[in-house]
Amino acid sequence: MFDKRYYYLLKIQYLGFRFHGWQEQPDVLTVERMMKRTFAYVLQHKNFKLLASGRTDAKVSANALYVELFLNDAPLPEEGFLELLNTNLPQDIRCLSITEVDKQFNVMDAPKEKEYLYLFSHGQKNHPFAAPYMVAIAQDLDIPLMQEAAQLFEGTHDFRTYAYKPNPETKTIGTITTSEIVLNELYTANFFPEASYIFRVSGKGFKRHQIRLMMGALFDVGTHKFDIDFIKKTLVPDNGIKLEHIAQASGLILHEVTL
Image (tube, rainbow, N blue to C red; front, side, top):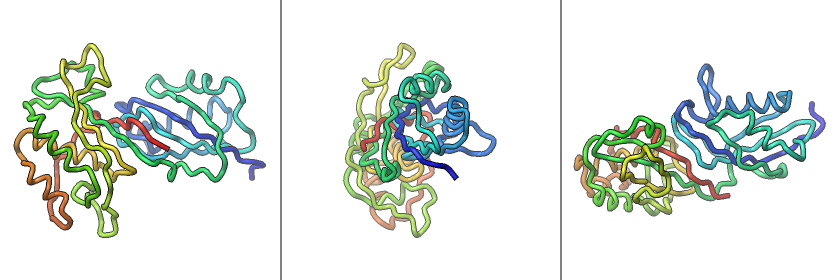
């Protein structure tokens, strides 16, 4: 038994390209595994637990993810711990802040909204250095038509078509507050293509692979495999449509979480 438990909220960011997602799994490298290893090293004990506000899939990055630290027996040092933690974390993980919270705080219930970005380009193969951040579609895409289709996702809908392997009990009614495709002026690098785009989508929560299924459908609209009416049909309850195009994970970023 421990004498006392302390609670902290961490805001972290990471490049997901070499990780098999956030959640610790046997025999693969995950962000949670690296975080736990680093905490064990800097604290010199394993009397702690980490719980994230959500989970990202393999190769998905996070510009902002909140993680709750449950620490037993002794509090974190008052000065210098953030710098010590970042010094020992790998180069592709960074902790932005550490704030003490009380035991009533629940990191799973705290998020009011999550914003995801999906970066993509089209018409040519990108510099290999761009691969961890964005997906290049070889074909030319009809961007104005994709922009029109993306707006259809806004509002409250039954997103069962965009839920990965849902069962009858899966709750698929959800509300998307923002769904748009815009020119990428947020993430830039000299090895990025001259023009790239962002699919920006926000809401309180999303099902597994939901945004990647939405992006896959939008890509199919962009190549004229699907039309606007098809997207409308996918949002009608009990439509029986099964989508198979799940967009690659490496273009997806959990950009911001609003508490």
